[in-house]
Image (cartoon, rainbow over all chains, first blue to last red; front, side, top):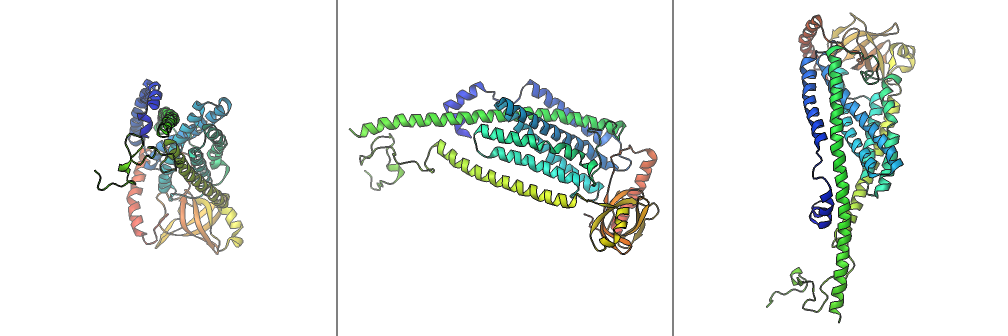
Length: 265
Length: 201
């Protein structure tokens, strides 16, 4: 990755580009996220009382529900950006869709991990192939597939079109996954807050859940902006690499022509 | 001047890009091979490797998806049978491993040498259960559970108890905290008692 940065073309490209992915907006979001996470820890671990049935293990909920909600939000952003890409055909929407999917996969994998820990202490087992977990696994695999398809070297338009199609199709699984606990028999408990008009929760427990949800949404936006800017800069670096390669070839061609003429008088 | 002169050595090549001692043109006119090519062509080689890895990863993801759908549709479609459904099919289910769902009948739980015996009920049908192994912490009367095991005559022989928690959460109250503390003190003893049959999960 070093050569593009040292050649004149890359330097010219970098001159117009920011040298950091930070801005006033991201710094504000970052401070809110970090202070918010500390507040979630205080409410989730200290202030909120143990659950009548689940005891102390209820505290995993303050991580489990926010991580999955942010992942769903991320995948919806990917789908919307994918539609916008197919319509507008601009790099902005393509990179936004990809950046959001990447953060979504991160949050979703985290959800599965903290869910397994929770399952072990409440159900008694880490995993069973029950409906919610099956649809969840399918959802994770489709978005990993989305990222893998994007990593196949191809021209940006093909890559964008293909991944946009996947990004739109995969989002259909979110309502299925969310409703799996109502539609089929399984082990997983029903919805807690998301999409429920009258949550089966109250008091400090409910407040801690909403607080954690809000904080994780802000955290998601913060990470998304940074990830998007990194992706944008990576594209600029790639562009610079291509112009550099072209100019190097041109340079060689001129040199070569002169030299060959010189040795054959 | 050059005792060890070797025309093949890289040191023999002129530095100025001009003709060398043998009158050969100073720069290479042979077609490029990928090894000696410039930035553009090595990027091409990297691209092929990346494509190979990416397509391999995609194939792995698709195989995993197919496997999950296969397992999932086999298993998740009838994740459990309720007690009344299981009893109705008791003849056909003899010896077959399946999951049965119901509520633990209050005052029916009896600890045995290698587990617990209790009665499971759903839709006012009851089944006696013999469980081998340590029940999970949240196991107790009136708790909805899913058992894994087989029918042996009238009795269901279970070796795994899964707790089905509902989505109702309630803050623990003072009297319940006392209760929980009593449970907490009772639990480690029960766990050590049954370590032989343990290995839940």
